Image 1 (tube, helix red, strand yellow):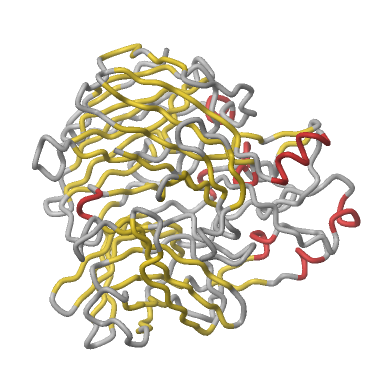
Image 2 (cartoon, one colour):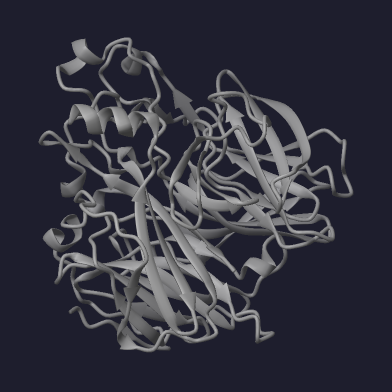
Length: 491
């Protein structure tokens, strides 16, 4: 088993990763397990850790000898781990989407993938087939009594949280039109207005883009709903909230659909940075806030491309937004094998802070961390408020791009950092911060995440102390799960 290292210093190891270790994670999930008991290989599962980790990601990456062009085109597979009294129970199941059932029966790809996967037969077999395959692979959250497997270009799929059985496409009690886009990146308001809320959106893109902002109670009841239109093509994967605002960054992106229509590229491969335009912050007033009913505010943003934000908060006449910036839109073009990418040729993600002055309509930017990072998070009780601590997945080296192999805790006030590393043979996924309800400290709790163990070619679950990133438990999962996307914690 790969020996993980934990420390509380800023020392950076120079251990290099092996590409075969990293690429070996891109395999099909071969088993579906139910209520499988887990034991800690090292350490002890904290008895105060009570709840369920749900995680989504691509689980079917190959059919009939054909591998997807990009892992984001893989069919969604949900994993759940329930923690109680120092014990852990594991289950996993594919989301039974209509397309998954069809392709399972056929034994081959019947649909094109947004990120470049094509049906066999070349451009002629793919031309004019502009159907979008809902792969339900990006996130999983609980709303009301159901789990929702999210994919941002269509309706979610509803599942039973107890056994992961797929119920079918959900319109959220008629809130959504059939096929309507529904974000895979909701934000959870911890109670800024007296109750917990899920804030989310759907975007309809084009020369003029429409954002539908929705807020839901924990029961699933729709609390507010507004629509706003903005000029230009809007590629939006994530957003942030404050008590009064929903904040979007409209990247300077162009979309040429012709290569997609003619069967030459996937839809996402038709996106490109637009040097003639500038990014824009789209500030939409929340219906429960102080600016309810007002028009959105549009303020020019900095250069760069953003997939994910960390957090946002209000300070006097400013909105502070922390985000992970890339110099350009990263993409894998036709003819490239994603398993052989050169990380040195891909721009790294850098955590930056933008201060949006609402009176002067001006933005200033500062760098918070120069180490390549992704999947940054704060204590969920600080969502939309000023947070002192952040946790994120990072590359092993201090500068430049590389696979995600470590977890970093960053003090946003002092700059002090803690590092935990799975290098050289381990690769990390999105970390979730689970607060310890018995403690009052902002950074007191646990960091939970999957790692790909390149030595045993399977997946481990790591539990770290969120204060100093010391290991609490290493749990070897009984199956191999590819590098994944997003997940959630349900207390």
